[in-house]
Length: 130
Ligand SMILES: [Zn+2]
Image (cartoon, rainbow, N blue to C red; front, side, top):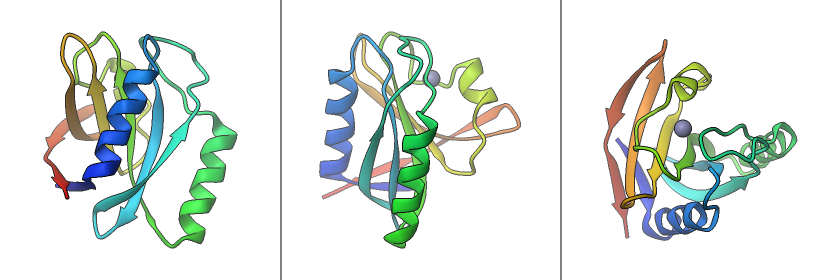
């Protein structure tokens, strides 16, 4: 189970809504399996159906996380028009042993969390903390 501070959870959803009609993405970091920081990273694919984090921005964020002695906990991205489940490409490009959060936007907001391994995904619980 992944825990997320309420203000970070809300900021993530707002960011996803603002990115419409494109997918947006980013990294969540924190401590003890609880997300306390959000890092928004440019989707260099400018697409409604896929994302690729800008590699330089991602590198900068990874360094910042390390320098703050935080843990890299999750990668989030939005699905402006799709379901909140990983696409084939999401499964193929899940290289990290972190949580993957998908924010579906239409017809209604739905947030789901997964671990993805060997092209298979397992749903995980998210707990929003005040
Ligand atoms: Zn996706």
